[in-house]
Image 1 (cartoon, helix red, strand yellow):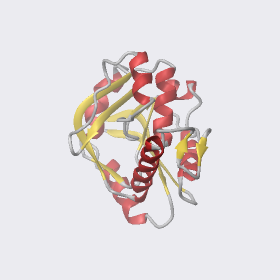
Image 2 (tube, helix red, strand yellow; image 1 turned 135 degrees about the vertical axis):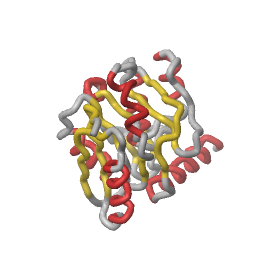
Image 3 (cartoon, one colour; image 1 turned 90 degrees about the vertical axis):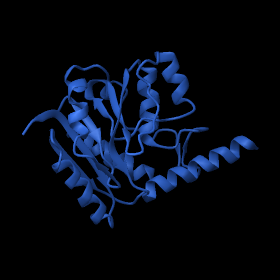
Image 4 (cartoon, helix red, strand yellow; image 1 turned 60 degrees about the vertical axis):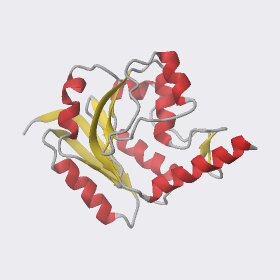
Length: 209
């Protein structure tokens, strides 16, 4: 079975065992398999708990690449097969695909300045992106610094998720973002996504004041 120098990291919280099992099964069904899949079930929920889990998982990664997989997402069988060549050729520091809807934004040809400007107002890169660990470590990894638990925003917003915050910092550090515009994973409507939608709406209301 072909493998790739990659660790998949899945944070979860108690009570989501059925979804977690499906996420695990989607990794096991890959045509090209990661070298490792590490999982941490932690509580309570909310962004600080997720960041704590992601940070603990990242600390045990021993591969060149890392990818996230939330327990409410599932990978299509050719997800890592699609990413393999780009990763082995190191064409970027963050390499991502589209979800099953086939919709997304291709940042491949964006300059550093354009990436910084984009991430200051929006995010299109999923947590399933493959991240080169050297570039990840260079910016300090996952962080909840500046996160306001009352508004669910980093600082004044509009950033409301730890992966978006990571992309902002990596872009500012000159990381290369590469998109393969192929639908390779399915995002389900779980509680974390509803929290994100609520945070987005709070920011919109605040901006309208």
